[in-house]
Image (cartoon, rainbow, N blue to C red; front, side, top):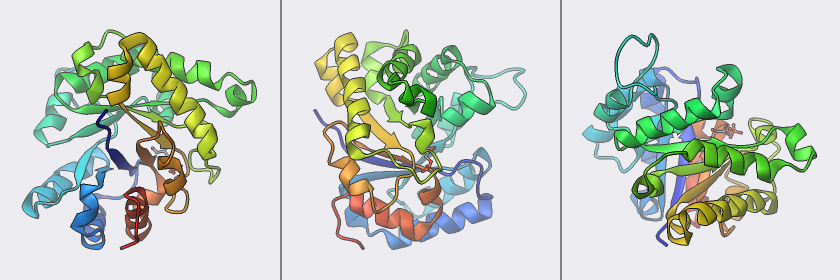
Length: 261
Ligand SMILES: O=C[C@H](O)COP(=O)(O)O
């Protein structure tokens, strides 16, 4: 088992390319290099910012990784508005979120489409961050484990076994996203543990043990420490708190086990 902690900042539809440069510069300035040995840090800006982030990361040889928030299932062609895996690979993207609940809800993405996007990312050696998570009504009905494990299996359907450990999972309960209502470490562990158990059942303990599982939903510097202490939580997918350089830096430092920079 060789899982490292990953903190990925999903900027969602925030910040233009000039604001992106300013935020990356602040993060790089505030988080001393020694932390990058203990925690992998990535930012996921809007498509329009990625080239600027790439230039900065390459030019200043930053240890920061970056990626995108969506990828087309197709490599090229008449798909207006889509951005392809080869385009993201050319920009040096390490990660791409796939199946975020906001894409599922506002763009009607189905498990079948999410699965195609996972495969598109893997085909171009970009690590998909496959998001799963239950709405409030599903949790209240006690169906959250079945709901998320079903999304997981559907999202990975037909993936080559030797590519699976490149996939990162993100458990994001919909009721915790942007609400300030973070799942308790025990609640988050319950689902992340169940996801890993399901992976072990389907693909074997070794592969399951090597796959990283993140928690997402109202993660802040004050709660990340207890979350990453859980056996099956290997980091976080962070929304709002990733837009504030000071808070994001603190959060990464706490995920690395502290102290604050
Ligand atoms: O991708 C990130 C999640 O949707 C969490 O967002 P949040 O940290 O603002 O709750």
